[in-house]
Length: 509
Ligand SMILES: *Cc1c(COP(=O)(O)O)cnc(C)c1O
Image 1 (cartoon, rainbow, N blue to C red):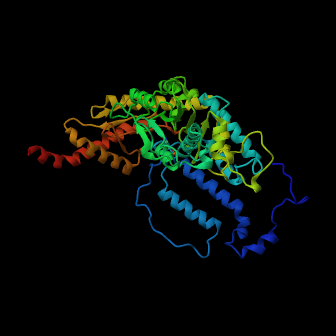
Image 2: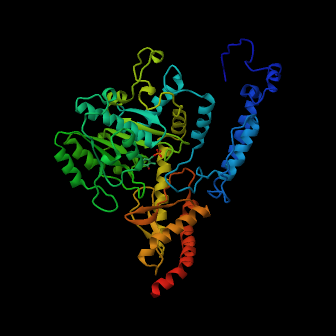
Image 3: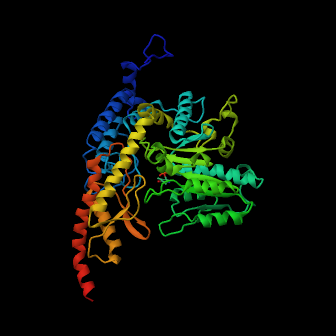
């Protein structure tokens, strides 16, 4: 790498004499200067070994987890010894969530390009708050956000920002909504606060995610103010109820949270219908597409997010389907002025010459920020639109494959359509009374997690305890997903046999 050094004529590195001067002082980090390259090599070697086995490893290493505590070391052990201890702990305790059979929650892996870029992010250690602190990070964040808008079919004129995840992305989108809502009442809420304003009318379907409610809570709007308007126990939106809330709210501004991808089933609120309804009233439409926004990447599923470009704010996650390592999310806002208004901050020492575009520090909750754009840029540069389309479509096919296997099994019951990448089903062997199915499925869920070949817990869907494996990891293949059904049936058989003695006397009564 070509470089300009302040020490002209020298390599800029610390010579052996200078190193020796400090060595006796280890563990002062400066004394470990000479170990830096060795520390990076150790990390690379161990990371490579960890990932080399991840396609085959159990998702959770068997054995008790270590819950021992210890007090702050007075004298440190030095870089290499500390890293070696960390590696040993990771071997025992780290879930192989980056691997192909972690179907719990919605957890992606790290593509080779994203992971490599993430390492460089730490090595370069850029503060992505302002151009002056990192022109690189600022430029790559702008490019990454433009590319993501293209990927999802969002207008280039929208503003955007990278966040730590979908929860903070929901926070960003809903903060812009809160600013808009305040201005509708003639109040700049960032300056004057919320007091004196009426409670906000917020509505969603029963699919609303806990993180959106958390964002509403953090924004001081009150989690309990969110009305979930569902027409059935599964949580599907009640459009008539939504229409009547809007009619009754008259000229009051309203915020609607649309769920593009329910965590239990991958089902979508009807975005186009909701946007059409909202446009007849004074309503802000916020779309939580933490993983579901990736439906936009394939022509096969694009229709699920029809109307997206008519929304006011749209968010998604990067550490889910984009397969960038933790942590990463992104938020997009139709009105860049509202977005910037919600997060502007200033201080004498921060002011630089007026930039043509706002600094990311003034578009996000944080001021100092990790340069998350490097990993986004690298993975999109490496695989492009088509690479992501191939991956998403592979996952769609794998989900259908699992759905077919569930349907063909006499002891499994599918509980919802598979419109995307989540398969919602339960174990239901013939002869087990309905009222025992929840307990049985909970037990099977525990056994699945203990077993570790595949990994997913239970949820409650439409009042029934169910499994909901979600497929989003770039490594996942046919062999991996085939273990979902075979493992549930095998462990289900074991759980049912164990439950049998308890059941028989109960039936005799
Ligand atoms: C995962 C998820 C979130 C929260 O995302 P984090 O990245 O964990 O903050 C929000 N909404 C939906 C629909 C999700 O699936």
